[in-house]
Image (tube, rainbow over all chains, first blue to last red; front, side, top):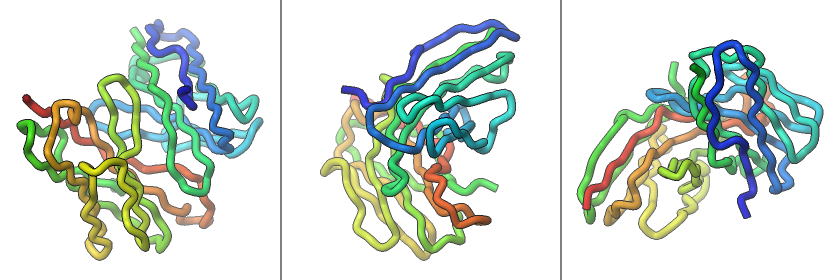
Length: 112
Length: 120
């Protein structure tokens, strides 16, 4: 039933390793987003996408890449994970008209 | 500078009380939307309220409402008759058109959030 599904729900990664976070939506939305949440911060936008095969940089893109191979799927890639990337990551989708974001359940990433 | 400001980082209340969570925002756009989201302990992020400057707020349930003061650029979330299940983290968020291009990126800018604990 969940319209935005993230995987994995939690992950422990080693510093310098590659991490891929996946997001799948069944809302038929064109817009998708990756946010991270840290203690003491709100959600901050990393990357977003309007359409398949195209991504845009958000407010804090450094150290992250994104991939949108289809309307339904949006991945966040950490090529060289660092301690500072320990956070909860949220994927969201939007139809771009009501501007309401529909979120996944989040991925808790710990980089050791 | 922060565009969305939530003053309280953490607050505690007793079951049955009424709570107001304040949020102020900064925008030069005429067209913008405001949102209140709740981050549940389960991890789910749920929409509570969507407010447009020219319309009445859309409420998620009868216990959630907003006090919207457009001239003060303030939107407060009011939760009446608090229940332990209201515990969680509440985020205020702003959508606006991109200042430089006027384009709709659809992205939201969030406040830091307020953690609420409701005690039985």
